Length: 157
Image (cartoon, rainbow, N blue to C red):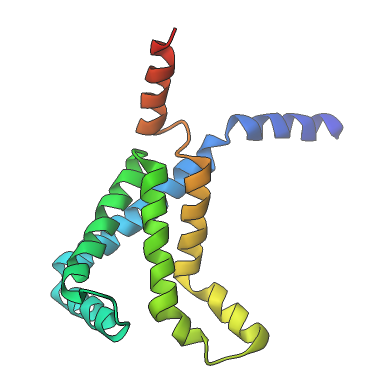
């Protein structure tokens, strides 16, 4: 039994890149689509603009184009693993801003544990945690960041 868990631990360490890669694919595709539809679907764009105005976001007309563009580009960069930590940080800031300026009001009407539970049901909280993890974990081996970093490391020798 000990051998089984010892080997399992070894194989898991060999595949540490896999959950990072799968997470990057999922979150990257999600934010590409989210940004795309907020930019090019007039109903989605109007809804975003209305939300930004009601949340008192500065320059809502500008930000209603800027934020989805950042989501689209940031999602694409995370998907391919290029500038992953920077993209994760920028998208993390957008998610925290969305939580603080708009989403927290939806759950604030409840108190105590219900408030905490409802807070963690917000999808933006999950995205924030994922971006926080990607910022510190990096993109993994299946990424342009890894390939570029490997070439730089090899050129030193």
